[in-house]
Image 1: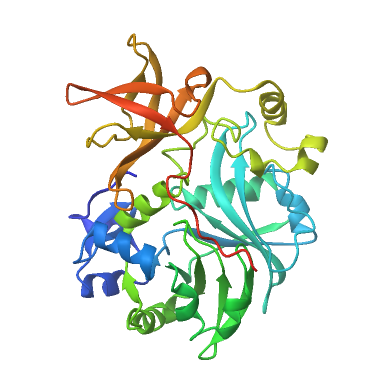
Image 2 (image 1 turned 90 degrees about the vertical axis):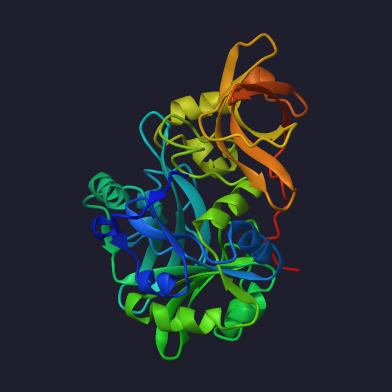
Length: 380
């Protein structure tokens, strides 16, 4: 995750909660062209631990939000992704990948089928913040004359994550507790229409709420006053998602990686494998059948030294065999963890590989993902 100081914040975009973060003592940094909170007064580790034990509140309004409208928009978007979207049930949420013609990952995104009071039946999209408008334009160009792509700039997006998030959200949206992981529904609080999904990117049970930008500070001010809730910044969001083995676009996945190399085989639905009518299908289907040359893996340093993005990985003889894409200290495991890509022959769990940090040779064990078990609510 690339972060820089926000000293020159006048040139940065701001979410509707920017002033709110500063009021609560956030340390602000630049991320994806936005001024965003890295952490609050208690620090990253305390914020991480609070999310794992209670409920953490994240501002993710920098993400790109938009709608696909038109006849059979689910079938249309299938032209760009490898997942079955056509016929997705009302309220269904799907994680998928926007692919280029070579099977590389342009972005990972969430698609939701729901009814908007003004637009009718729509596919609601959430894209990563980096170059979000360019990606909306790409989708619009690729699907012109099929659907209309409508990015929105007047909405905020917040995530409430952790084992007590259901208890908290039920005070505002009682029907939210009826949702299971990757389900969504339009709900109203205080007369304001919101879009609530049981989803998130921490590995914990949780909810994401899209709401009008001019209502965001009022709503978040109420949430943060709940006894179970604390504000959480980008720093803990990164350590939480890495413990859960979740990819960060631009680090762990990008246009140089395919779904199969990145361990996201499940995003290529069986029906789509049979039809083969998605970008990069020839390569991706051959990788499913014949295997890949590199693979995303979990990495456990056998010391207290943390690996960072870009650290090279090599075998016992010093041959270059891969690189680290994400790394941090795990507050849950009390040790460093990392993810990266290795040549397939070195990717088996238990294999020992090496890296070098500040002139020191480190021994690293390949391990399965996730590092910390996920706690998504999938129903009884």
